[in-house]
Image (tube, rainbow, N blue to C red; front, side, top):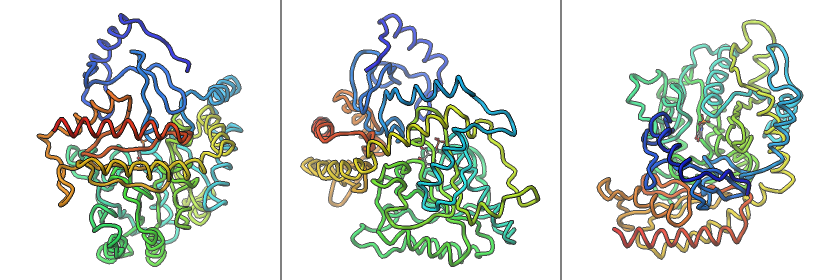
Length: 454
Ligand code: PLP
């Protein structure tokens, strides 16, 4: 592992600077303490990350659900270096070969091989772009009254204003920012707002039809959802859930947007999650693992049916510009990243190792605090810890469960996420069987320790 060692003095200086000036995402500002604060990391290789203190950790959620090819890949550094020396930004009215090639590569992997790819710089922008394209499409096909968007409660689609109006996941505190964008309609989240998967009667999918009819179809532009929502706790939906939504969207002329920002590029054991159910979205969004997080990128991947209505110079064209969209070094990183995913059969590894991980996680039921183990579709899983298994009773805020879980995870060499009593698993797709055995052993240690402390 290549790592930049820091002296104790350098670490202290960085902690002081960070406490005063660095504003972390989604964490309390100013906390760079050893115990609970933001950690300094200096190296990474495969599923492993090294802290400035020399400790090694398993990166349990692949950075932020994105490091699919793992840390420390020289091939990406070399591709980006070469691209930066060739041309690092293509001026207005030009495009780099890497950008064109990546658009074609993504289209070749997409359910619709004739897709057009609109590059942006991240997942939120990809979702914003997809929403604008869906509304513009409705105008172009003579439906200008369609502006409403249907999304599922507790979904996460990004941090910008349009994104926080979708689903209203609590991490975004949507009520802090005044009235949300008009035209947002929230429906049920599978696995959260309905019964156990065994009892599923697809009422959550039918909720979408009810919402369309209630709002009046001629006002509804689009539906958006993540194939498996990580934010809502990784509930794999019933096999007929997505095909039913596809039928509903077709029946009422609603654009179907699938947010593959987490699930794209192999996470669910297929290149894109929609392949698990054989459906074709009208638009899908990608970001994170398109470069495995080596450089910022995002894209709205738009089916030919939708994109063709916007081609040309007239009123029908899409007026939309993002400065870093299609950035050549980011696209060079993306091309090499996809090449590695294909060459190293990482999609297949995600399917087989995902199955093994899910199987091994069942051992956690030996702990009384394990309420649910979810997953089984690629390397994406969750363990929900509860105060009581039957009837399922979540921990109360005064139990400080997430804090205890986080501290125990760090002690046992796991970097990851404990959120609302749930521990998430989304490791790099390079993970091996031995590494999974190590992870599951450590997680069992964590569960024993937290259980004893309650
Ligand atoms: N969509 C989904 C499903 C996400 O999980 C995220 C981020 O985690 C986003 C969109 C937003 O992506 P970004 O943080 O790159 O803006």
